[in-house]
Amino acid sequence: MQIIKEAIAGTVESSDLMVKIAPASGELEIVIHSEVYKQFGEQIRSVVAQTLEQMAVHEGIVIIEDKGALDCVIRARVQSALLRAADAQHINWEALV
Image (cartoon, rainbow, N blue to C red; front, side):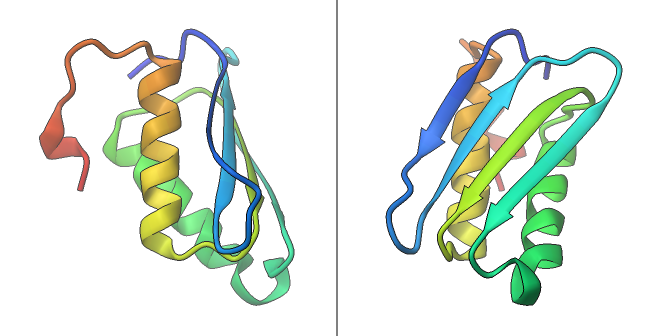
């Protein structure tokens, strides 16, 4: 999946997160801002990285503004932002685990 435009999903309300995605050539960068980074930063990064891998994203920039979201919320927000950023017309539902 190729990121062709900027996209946003989510909110900055409690127990949610906002995902911002933009195209970038040659690299995949994940930036995480979280109130609970010391406790859960590596778990957040792991969920984001797994979701990007499942959706075959290899380059772009992903910025996470976390407010204590659960893994399932992180995954859903990243998937939504990716589908918007790729301007996906045909969705591979099997990739959305």
